[in-house]
Image (cartoon, rainbow, N blue to C red; front, top):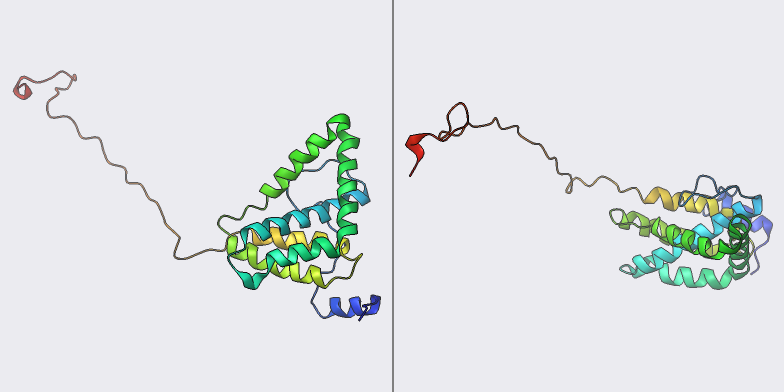
Length: 196
């Protein structure tokens, strides 16, 4: 069955998807310089791809989340949009950095991957990435970029670790007054009674 625009609207209205206009400025990660609208959309798509790639690597502990199969299926299903995003991002860095554009794009991509590190919030990150990956698989070709900004924002929000009452430790320090050395006089010289 082929999904038309009316079908996509019904799916979005049903709350399955995370529909909103692409948002690039608020998706976090490494800072970007002035972007064209096409580059802003590419940034959102590239960030979402990076987040789902990190999830595929970090979240294999739960087969239920299907982060690996979600990511692999997204690469196949949305290959054209991902390739276009890659080209737009590469052109963005060439425009700003000239001959060093490739190198700065590699540095940016590394920072982007690292920005999705989920040490304390791994469970919430993996759960959200699993959901976003399943929703992305449900999108027809050509619709991935429309939802990428909102999806990245959801994943970023999941990186904030929830309070865990079993891990809360309060450290307090006691101020202990200085105890005078009984073997020193008031001037700090050794006393005769303490000599061995």
